[in-house]
Length: 336
Image (cartoon, rainbow, N blue to C red; front, side):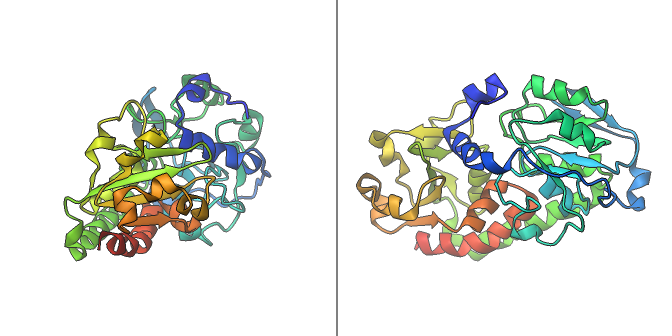
């Protein structure tokens, strides 16, 4: 697959590249639907105009958008959580159908046109006649931004420091809430999720200050997530702290690769394993990984359930809420 943005091609971590390769077949096609439901209700109209600060400067949304195109990672997911149905959306996690995970099942009354992820068909985006484009979690590539901006509608791109998919779920929720005139709803969702994390941490005091290594087995090999990634942020909100030896290798991405000789870095009080183009049998048959002390001792949680893995990966307010419910018991069992 040819990546359209050279900077992204250089910097995208292996995990993301693997995911993108896996998603190619369903990331660039879709159907137009000019009869899609309006983007927002009239109650939000009084919120406009609003100005959102992005890495490319301030963007003003002058009136209530009615045709939202959501291109960034989980932008459509967040819009739906706020009661807005995009007319076009990218399906970064290859859900198929309307591009949503089980936590958003049934929220569309009219499915969106599914658009590309890394590679966008600008003619298809333009044909949807958007009056707002969301790209809050993406590469932050200027060429991509400039191409979208040529469509002449507000483009809410990544925040400063959010390049390379590093926009946090809080930043994404805040930016989209503002752009859609749904600030109070966004604040309520944030409070609800924060409270859910707090309750889960309180119910599991054994998590506090235990080290965790969030590793991934991809089609390319092993890697680990560092702070700034939604998975690590999720685990730290439950009381864990990221394994210091892994965190020390952090550079300019949310992911580091690990050679087989570095697999001992996966040793922690709890090791959490994500599978990307890899199987549970493959990991359980990996003698080097199974020899990692924490894994050998059974302090390991495998995220082999696709819905759970996707909920983590979505790093959206609704996906994370779903993950708190599903993952916390698995972590408790692994922590012992």
